[in-house]
Length: 124
Image (tube, rainbow, N blue to C red; front, side, top):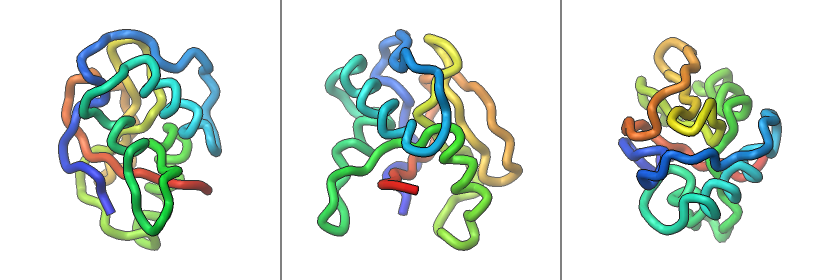
């Protein structure tokens, strides 16, 4: 299920959070850890994923751009997605992070202050 139906990517700091520019399986976990360290406290996409507790598990994270696209490809199997954009943990630059529209599959670098949906994942 979604952890948010509209939240900022950051807590207002426009800084690079992910020094590693890799993208792929499990990179979202690395990104989420880096984001929460650099952004600190607050309510923002990576933080709500990192603090999410469900099913007895506390190892949830914000998916990378690649992982989010895999979710899109299986959205009918996974289920529960809105016809809207979701944040990934991948950054384009200090001001923009990658999102994916679950209506038309488009991935785009968007200003971190926009409010998009968030879906935490545990592993692929």
